[in-house]
Image (cartoon, rainbow, N blue to C red; front, side, top):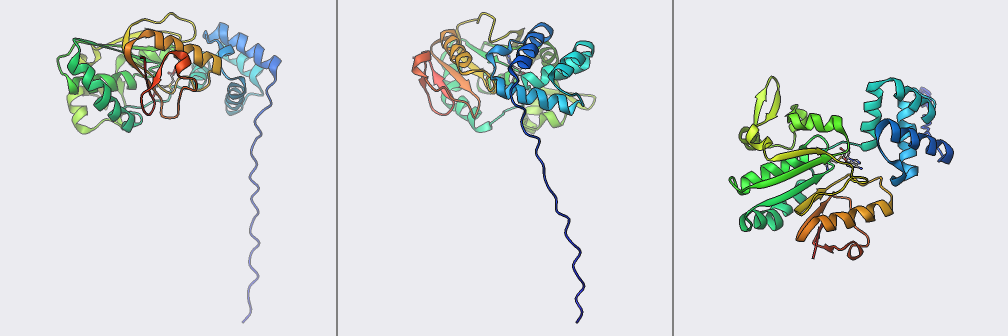
Length: 279
Ligand SMILES: C[S@@+](CC[C@H](N)C(=O)[O-])C[C@H]1O[C@@H](n2cnc3c(N)ncnc32)[C@H](O)[C@@H]1O
């Protein structure tokens, strides 16, 4: 039997764009412009990571480099917002890492809500409000009448004003069970809106964790997935300031991949998982 020669398989060469080398002068130039245009102090962020993200963003927008990006950002308000969103990474969701929220509820939130006259919680870097509303739902499930103060802060004004509206699309509601939707939300057009009684629990404020004074004291501070690109000294200072903003016995709740390296030096003790307690 005659065998047909097989068609030659195309060889696919996958090429990865190399991460651009950090150009310190160009980085400093961009950091100066970012500070004046967006009010973000990049000196406390890890330069290599920021540089990679900025260049990736510039390429995605069809711009040659960071200088070209900054020049365009000056003139284009939409691009300015997209640039800010990219730098601050505001990805979030309701009940992000549900297992950590379960631990928070069972080991910390319930005893506080059932044993104290009032509870004060700070969601630092709250993005679109998923985190403070998650806290508010849990608090109301545990103690429907208990006075509770939830402070929700973020660096990004635009994201905060969207968070305050408390309106979420169907895909954004992925982490919210049907029972919670019924209890805490109402439908408006094809979206979901937080009911006023839940929204009333939250105080919103623009706040830069690297520059502004911290309110205190808090029983719980949630700062999750915010400091990923901060330098180690900036993180250490931030954790020290969180520790001082907690009441004795208060709890710091970090993101699933975050930990504090020199925990005692910042005045905290490990409390299991990504929880740290002020002694
Ligand atoms: C990835 S989101 C985290 C949202 C939420 N905490 C969570 O874990 O899902 C990071 C948020 O931190 C905010 N952020 C970044 N740098 C900040 C700073 N220096 N001060 C306050 N908020 C900051 C960003 O604007 C963004 O909304």
